[in-house]
Length: 456
Image (cartoon, rainbow, N blue to C red; front, side, top):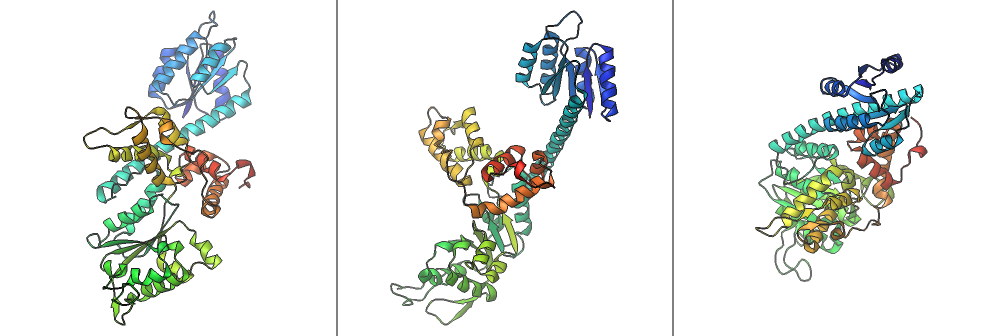
């Protein structure tokens, strides 16, 4: 990429050309607005260094203002640095408000000017690479959507694409899958995607909240019971394992299963065999296991609250679902999808005002996708004239953050990426598959400060 120098004085152009070329920065020069716009249209211009006045007897800056606005109309993302020898500060301030990057008075500071230009060129190249990456990611997502059943999942982030791609690639096998991530992030939806793309897609998909089963009901619920097996058991009961025969059993909240329950579950996972409560007949089932948890099971193992042997039985493939706060590109599309589903039959869905969109994007979403869905339901009921305003969302900006035990692995990964990137947030964000905005939001949520991090 090149720097476009815009000045009607040849001596200024030459001085800037020599300065930039000494620092291995390629340059182009132009002395009129028409020439500037023509070069931007056909050359690889990364930064414009623009004089504010093109006629020696004019010092108002009007020419510079008109050119800047023409450049913005042609390429709204192209960074422009303003330069002037005259006291047209009002014009400069106006253009800074309109998006000009910086302002230098003549004579300029060589070091500061070169440093600013280098940084802008680097950011422009990074933005271009991010655009290319987004285009590749979009094509990859479209390919996955065409080839696989995503069960209506809406996503656009690179982080979520990686999870979905892994899910559909391992779906045809019978390997046990452990889905991890915060509550409400979409773990059950991911389990449905695995089932829908597996060879068991036409077989039963049985769901059970494993962490919600008391020990006295656990065996009957999972393995079934014969009449008279316990007080109140008047008829034969088929357990979840038996009901899922040939298909998939989804064990949600597995991290909250009691130690007694873990022992009973481990046996059937090891042998594929069980007995109904009150029966001595051994039954054998063919079931694929998908489990999910918001608990850090490695910490639970260290605390002695989760069996390591069971963990390795469940975790052949791990799918880690990122929190919604790290998937900001998906917030508005998800919200609009929920609004469409909530609309009464034959009526258009409620729409989000620009201010409501800003509030949704600024919120941390501790309850993730589930909370977003609830907020859309509330807003649909209370909004006026079909337009949702910020007050209709009922968001509490002071909502409690997730527990520390959920944030530790995320904090470690984030800090590691920032250290590797030497504190350059845009580079760290790219390595994590996040937008820069999403990484800043995560840093605020995790209380990560660049100055406190160790140097690479």
